[in-house]
Amino acid sequence: MDIRIGNGYDIHRLVEDRPLILGGVLIPHKKGLLGHSDADVLSHAITDALLGALSLGDIGTYFPPSDPQWAGADSLKLLAQVHQMVRDRDWAIINIDTVVVAERPKLKPHIAEIRSTLAQVLKVAPDRIGIKATTNEKLGPTGREEGIAAYAVALVVSQK
Ligand code: MG
Image: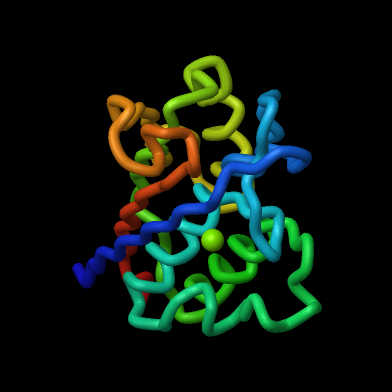
């Protein structure tokens, strides 16, 4: 059995007058994440984990922030596109696990929806997607609420 693992990390700045979107889900909060796309830090970390598993580069390789085409892009669509690249190469997701680092808002009430949203995009059962949330104990940029960070790992198996 040929299996491979990839990891991804991302961070975006929290600012006023932006929606907060995590894993494709709009989360009510007084601030949102700044970025060229919708700045969905969780989807970006998962996208990079999938690309990393197959040594296909990183999210910036395919969706460069310099390209106006990706302005305000729905990151779930970018994730779906990368998932298709994985499938085109005859690989399938075994599971994905993630950590979102945010001092606020509390993400627990939203985790089930985030998980089912990502599971739908990635065409896997929700129990193959782990979403964990932690604060940074008020330490560093995430702890000072200057941004939200996300880590992801993806395990994939060859279908050949
Ligand atoms: Mg990003």
